[in-house]
Length: 422
Image (cartoon, rainbow, N blue to C red; front, side, top):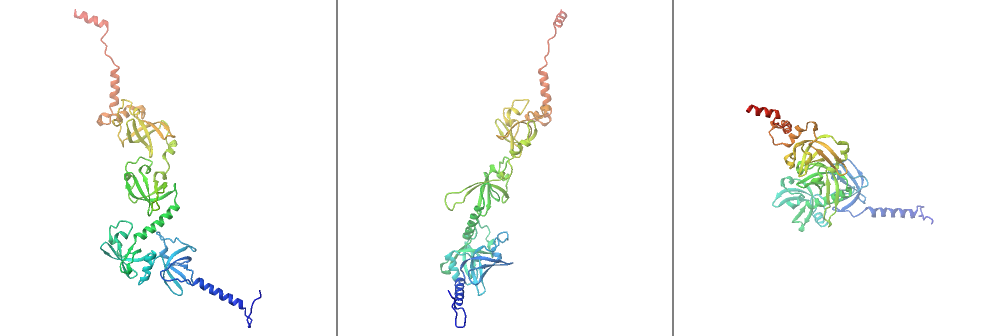
């Protein structure tokens, strides 16, 4: 199609097309953005102290960089990422954005924030009966003590003078404003939990903090709002009798996620089973290289049973001294008569069954060349200390006496005695 020209030779169609483009551009960019609006913007530049965002209008938005930093002070966003922000103020050149509404004299914005569940900033100005007085946009609001934090408030003074983000839970015409920080924190924690569960899986080794110690194990916080439980049997390869013998409150530990068990109900958190001991190698995997039959070792008696005593010969590796392997000099009827829990004893490795994780030990074969001294130390543990070293010699002397008999004399001696009497 031929181009159309005006009398002065200008291209009429080109002028109209260019005008249409400008109108189209204005229509796209002159969005009706107002103070208090919630918008999605794309990061176009990250400066030293400010982050610039495309708002979909002629004017770019700007938000303070400090608002976007994570807990460690790092910038988690990059150019091209999309942010959800609120319009605080605007002029011809730029739009001031924020993660939460703040300022003075924004009564209409407060009402809108109450309706839409928009976070607002407020300063805790006073401690009053039942909670706190909070200044929000020039208005006085009330925050119940139970709504200032997700944890129990021990000292109200800790919150005085601080600025937090709140949700408006009751507006009542702007006269009686009630706010909650706890509700907002729970919302943020839930978002954080959802993100955390996307990143972890069974078998992962992660860091956690001991938050509660119980007789049966320990509860460990993996991230705010996410806890798992390590049973006492999963704390160490060695036997643990008391949880607090091994762990302390607020201690940081490495844990292995054994199982993530999702519960019924949308609001139920998954049940997470953890292990501390499985973050290290099973000592039984090194047993073949560490122990040999006939090897003499020193071990600790960790448990008594009617049939013998379990002796720990390495962290996490217990062997059994059968009751028949406890003494050379006497028959042992009761294990507790020979050894007691916590006692250090000398043992000999008799047998190794790696498949079933069993090691048979002997106390009576330890120091076989000098067993009497060894056995006396074990068998007669209640005897006076000055008599222990003589028990072996006394036993030998007794044996020698048992093998010696007194004769009554020869027949000639009897005859001579009879003749003497005559």
